[in-house]
Image 1 (spheres, rainbow, N blue to C red):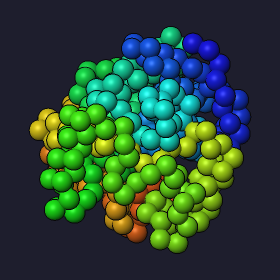
Image 2 (tube, rainbow, N blue to C red):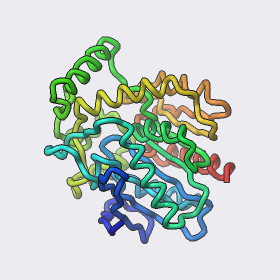
Image 3 (tube, rainbow, N blue to C red):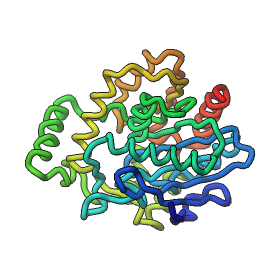
Length: 310
């Protein structure tokens, strides 16, 4: 473990700090920590694809106000974690099982640091895919909360067989590191105008994300690789056949969601005993990056779930 940068663009609570840790396979990860001396527990936050610790600085502030410490991870291939390809803007992973090594390292750090227990999982998008797998592994987690979990990838029905075929062929023929069709090295929040974006309806939070990308381009990421796409499709399919974990759960989803496939989310929530599902009318993909009313409602519900399971 060693100190790592934590950039001021996070706008998180005072005295945040970051550390480099290594996963069991030697990949270097970055962890961002916002302590809370009187914490009722620690939230382990797993970001989505392309994301980084600083994006959740304000979320750490929201959780602190509700009584929780927050630990955020740069999973492999993102933020300031090790990136596997020569083109560091390509989002790549060989297999989603690798991300579980990252979560193991995150939990080991939390335990070694004596962070307040219980531990809770909060995740967004791709992080929700990782977190669901983690929740099936009997880890020391008391409850889980999801924002727009990636339990399926939104695409036209006719595209899915082609995506599977092309991404699988990329592994056979050694071009799995190439960008998935229609994507490239551009970072979405810098390439896209606010008008027409698919992340948030809130201009202030859009500006927050854009400021971060402009100020610290080294933490940003472009499109996914064909290898990542293949691994993601395989993991979503594998998770779809698993029973829901025996853990309290809260899931939020915007009704204007366009990035993840919403059908697997509805199906999972319908068969998760006791789970709470909350659709946010008009919200897009980033529920935690929407306007103040939605963010307040989301974090209130997350905190209520976690406090009910201390």
